Length: 230
Image (cartoon, rainbow, N blue to C red; front, side, top):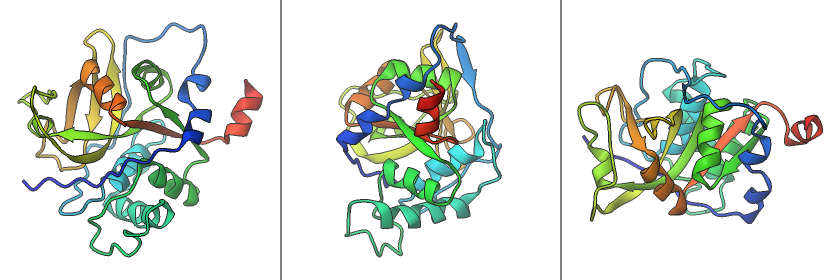
């Protein structure tokens, strides 16, 4: 199959003011594992570089929200995101090949009135705790060639000397602390990986996050309201 990417990294120091860890429950016993339910049919971005739109559409398809968003929503999110990001070269990307950022995707979803706010993580531990207690996350990372070929059980790793193929956006909807792996939902159709998903070890996830990766989750309350509750 032809593999298409489309995630552009975007750094903004202001993101560090809106961290997941500040909203995590305090003093509670974390579950060992949690996998959030999702509509069964995998999305397929086809020949397009719309992974950001697909990542956020999967987020909307996943519990606790779990709407009936489909591939048409992914295109709408992407088309809105390229108008909201900081780049101008992709403003007229009618071929949907040039990509955009995870942040622009979050802003597009907010502009559609689907969600109120979004928060960030740039470390492994708060990312895992968020998945175990709060919900799925959308992540943008480097994508290594060896990750494109999960084994029969859906497991993938970053192999030594494997080159980077591009930047990709996908969703993480599950974490298992005992097995030290996450369950990721991709957008390359049901025939890829394990019914469109793959399992990634914590150690590789941590590496990807530290290589300019960005982990984002959207919430249905304003950050101001959440701060007042705390």
